[in-house]
Structures are given as C-alpha cells and as structure tokens.
Image (cartoon, rainbow, N blue to C red):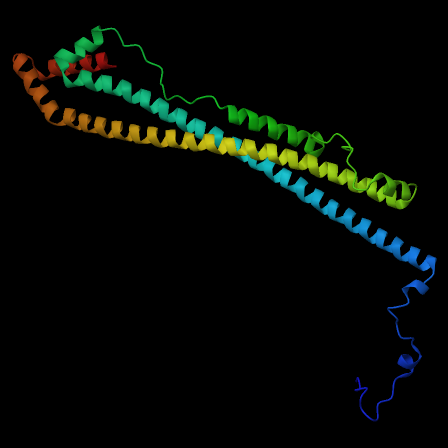
Amino acid sequence: MSRNPFDDDYRPSAASSTMPVKSYTTMGQHSAEDEADYYEREIERTLQESLDSTERSRRHLENSEKIGTATAQQLLEQREKLENTEKNLDEIHRTTQMTQRNLNSLKSFFGGFFKNKLSKKPQEQADVSAVPQSKSASRLSETAASLSTGGSSASFSGPSGQRTLNESSRNAIKGTRWEAMDNQIDENLDMMSANLRNLQRLGQDLGKEVDAQNEMLDRIHYKADRNDVIVRDQDKQMQRILGSDASTSQTTAESLTPSMDTSTKMSLMMKATSLWK
C-alpha cells in the first residue's frame, strides 16, 4: 500500500532512495552511441509500422476485389435469367397474336372462318421490343474474367518509380535490413495502386450493368402487364363464343340443315373442327 510522502512517519523505500531522479535538462550529456541507438529504434519502429499497415491495406483491397468479382458473376447470372424471362414474355405475346386470329375466325363461322382460311397468312413482324444486345454485360464479363484469372497481379507491372524515401535517405539505409523493408513497402503501395485501379474499373462496369438491368426490369414489367391484358380479353372472347355465340350458331346450323339427322350434324361439326386445326 502506497504511503503519503507528506506524512510525518513517511520513510522512502530502498529502491526509491537509490534510484536516480530522471533529469529532462541533461539530454546533451548522453553519449553519441545512446542517441544513435535511440534513432535506430525509432527508424525500426516506423518502418515496421508502415510495413504492417501496407500489408493489411493490400490484403483488404485484394479481398474487396474478390468480392467485386463475385458480385459481377452474380449480376451476369441474374441477367441471363432476366433475358430468358423477357424472351418467354415475347413468345407468349406471339402466341396471343395467333390465338386472336383463331378467335376472329371462330366469331363468324361462315364468314370470318373461311375468309381467314383462304386468305394468305400475314407475315409476322419483328417485335420492336425484343431483347437488345447488352454492351455493359460484355464489358463486365471481360473485366470479371481478367480479374479472376490474374487477380491483383493482372494490372501490376512492378514498381512505379515513386519511392517513400528520398534519395539521401535511401542511400543512408542502403545495405541494411531497412532497405529491404522499404522496398517491400514500396511494392505493397504499387500493388495497392493496382488494386484501386481494378476496383474503379469494376465499380464503373457494375454500375452500368445495374442501370441496364433496371431498364430490362421496366421492359419485363410492361410486357407482363400487356400479356395479362390480352389474355384476359381473349378469355372473355372465348367465354362469349362458348356461351351466347355457341347457342346462336347451333340454332343457325339447325335452321340451315333441317333434314339432317344427329349423326350427320356431328360429322359436319367434326370436319369443321379439323379445318380449324
């Protein structure tokens, strides 16, 4: 337990009584060797801290580059799924066009049916809203492939010529272990610079691809709504044909063929059905 030195019965310990009091006014009394050792330790500490810091930063940047490359691959896979979805919606739209033509034939059995069957089939027009080619996906794929195969060394071409120490300082540490540490620091900085360039390029390509996929999502939303409206309308048309129109057609057929028996009428209906196919 510590004692108050201002008490009357305070007695200094043996260690404190023999230890010299540190002086802050006698720095000049230290020998040159002591000062050299002090500065050497400071240089060693500074270089080691710089080396450790650049090593950590380089590893973080390399990890960020790997994450960016994986994100690019996921975006490209997502694009493929979106393209398939849009192509399926275009195919559904073409199918609804053919269905509408058949519905128009069914609406008027003796008029529109034979007119559509005997007339020339209209040429299918190219869908103006077809899936366009993506330049952003091609560029992103090239960037991701180059980084995946070469990693951070893909853009690293050795020291850039810029040094952390000036010429006189490098000459002072030449031939020592500090020179190797300084060289490693410079190499780490050059690799970090290459990583940053790769991340900048990757970030720009990712941004362009995200914008392109947002446009694709807007097209998919429009086409899905368009197909939904067409299918609902065609469903109503089919219900009318199978409902009131079917009963009217049956009455008309019976009035036109009063002398036909049931088997003959069924035969004619089956032949008509085969023509629709």
